[in-house]
Image 1 (tube, helix red, strand yellow):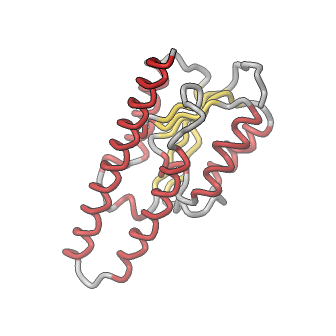
Image 2 (cartoon, one colour):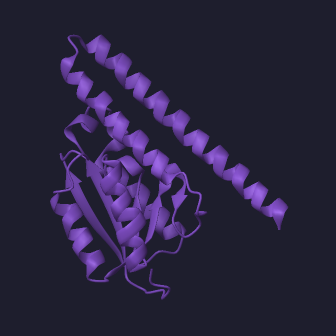
Length: 188
């Protein structure tokens, strides 16, 4: 990994799949852009560039906006990548892991997933990010189930389960991170 800090682009990545459109306005590209820009400004990130994929599934990484962002990372133009949450980045945990744990680290790129409380600059080595990637991958299977459901009411139950499950996982990860932080302080 590069230990040299660079000043480069702050890449704000937004993605919305056709499935996400059914979940309402909170996931819209416009709302993601506002959330990411607000976070970037509050935290002193500059040189902001948006990379956007609208109507594209997170199971594929052959997305135009995503590929442009990765090309900029590979050309050492990006210093930070910020996303709303891990599921916006992608839903294939192995590929997400490659980008966030290998490529970004090799290129010295900081990765932040706001709603998951993930910041590679502040993460411990015993990080829960890979676990969250696996959970996002599993959630894709739930999304696929909607195509097999015969009624809107059944789809509504699956959607409610998905939202509750995601909230529970996110809170568990935050609690575990807080516990590990307290343990590290106690050992010091």
